[in-house]
Image 1 (tube, each protein chain N blue to C red):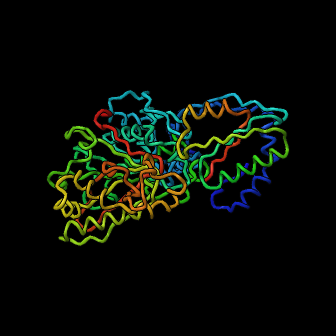
Image 2 (tube, chains in turn orange, blue):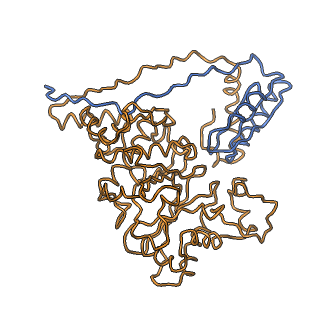
Image 3 (cartoon, chains in turn purple, yellow):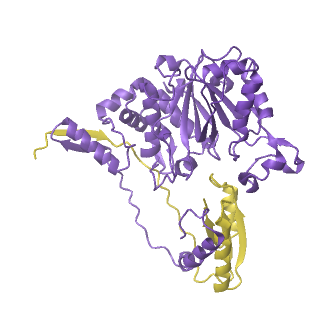
Length: 396
Length: 97
């Protein structure tokens, strides 16, 4: 009745919108709905396209798929029956097994559907278990897939792979780990996002209302560098309760990614800690407490001089990245009552120190990846989503 | 032009689960009805709903208004849906952003 967005309009404008819409509202509440015919005619399973030659046929297939909102704008590999059968050799799971329902379209993601999209993305069959695990992880209710698919905000699926499978599949976790150059990184993330689009129905401006979206919605997939972890720092998978020898996927729907670039090599631990803490303190306060601190190996080594374990670093950052409640309570998200969740505000005084981001130290996920240099990112999740994980090995 | 190559590819979207539900009751008049206002606490949704309720009260007699605030950005709980359904004859929702 009244189109979005309404948040940016004045009180008077919104009142006028209500006045303009009132007849429609009354009609909607009092007139019976017209009988709707919902067509349940399913699209055909097998689609035929033609061309003067193979190249033209593929071009026509791509054009057709884009008409149907089955793609990401980049050329797709044709998901022929033979190609999908080959892809399905990457898993022992039955093609008909339903991994879950992908909203908002409520498409049923079977193993075969996921394999079809993996072909389109350019995956090798051995990548399929990772894609299956990524989809499964995203269907955990804690991830809140429907919301991150449709939001006006930025919600970028970040896929992190932890475990021996990184070497096995040549998933990049060294220099340029988040950029181009490695087929596994490029296509696993792409396959996941294609599934969000084709099976899940995420389409810009119609179901996905994200103002900008993000290039990460093409692909954002990288590995954790086990060898670069300082002594005493656990890999992500054992922190999450999995065995060292197993491989997992960790998925976060990222709202913002803050670069942290003020590091100097060999500076005292306390100085580096302050630099990281400053970014956390200045980040947007939101509903969820979880975040991720992504460190290049050099920064990790520097921080490890003062923090012999990841837990120690989390504790130190939790204490350092706090501001007085007297200041934080005036932030917009706090005034709206959305933050901090679960904290008894009646116990707080203006002098109480509160983190705008971390409800507890464990809310910070620390990931080591990348090459030499001063790089680090602090990523915060979309407002009501949690990170989730899934064991990749069970999808082999 | 002669079409030489036939390419057969699999549908990547597959079946969608379609949930068909019965429509809520429509009343001839809203006189004496309980109006539920469903608000996701996003900015200005409250303004829109408050003005809507005011206008409906000028058009119909004895409308009883109840606000059902809920957390934004995630599906409402079953308990919330039940409370709103049981507590209202008609519902107007604002999903602000």
